[in-house]
Image (cartoon, rainbow, N blue to C red; front, side):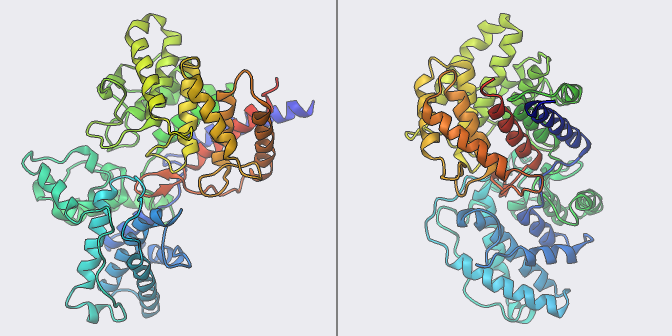
Length: 519
């Protein structure tokens, strides 16, 4: 057997194993969230496992006194969450003296970081930051300003926190007032309910089964407002905590997103034959003519719906894109009803879904052809002058650019030729000396996206500079990719997270298409 055959077999085996692992994992391969764990620690003293969560909070504080991943703007929300949770534990007065001392030190260091924040900053567009940040600032200040602070929390000192520039202290209350006359809270606020729960009248507290909005933090917050839900919250949160060693992710379970994105990533190389029945089963289970939601308790959204249509077509199932109609606004798709900021990656996935469906059902051209053309124009119009795209669901422009380039190359290669050339030039110009790409540091994940940008945007006639860039990337990925590799968190929810199985699929597919690009 030749070396190339062995390498090819390795891809097939690894891809098949990755699909099998995802199929067996009922929760998804994301790690615990500092933000979410701290919210549960603060709101749910009745939940078993508090010592583990306190230890985790103390262990995760960075040398500079902050919490979280990424640059400082991304650390704002996790640091606020950790400081407020530590203050809540100190106020309860139940921690051992040694732990109390460590928490006091951690709080003071965290407060120093927060008080030193710049008055104005380009904060990231993470989920509901506009209500979560001022809500946490208010929670911290309420504890700092309490008449009993000096008695309950000796050693905590300093002025109250200002609301960071760009946020508004009144935002949580404003949201609550907006929906009080209607008598119900839109589902889009369930996932981040902890940000507004203290302003919500009892009539607006959601009464749903399972985790509220798939969020442990939202679920714990609801229990503080509705004690009748506490027993069920203990059951639901304990099940998640068992999966995460007493800690909590930002969404649980994440099966839908993981399976759809993983399958689409592997399809860029090829879906292994042995895994096709499993992936086809996922597509059958996930596709919904009423629209697809990323996790139980979330809204149906265009991104997950488009990916369900796309993965269906990739496995030979011609599921109609009609559920996407709900989200179309005339030129492109809103992610969900009531969306504040649009998403180029959701629309790139929608364009791929339409193109894939039309290959199976060309008779639908009169319905979806004009819509695909408008979508192509809209995506081109969103390209940045430098040649890349950015998006609210991911910190890296390489993710957004990879999605847009893939969609445009599949549909509007002639019409979009200039946009594709600009994307390829930007990608080549931003490669690092070691062959990697990355918005902050070089990563295997972002390098995989960059590889796909160059291969999609320069086919069939790559220039020498593109070939050199791909050769360097192949060497980098071969050296940097290994089973124990820890992927930095780059994906947006309330804070940053890393869907490990999806990232592994992206990297694996990039390595395979690099290996076979001259075939």
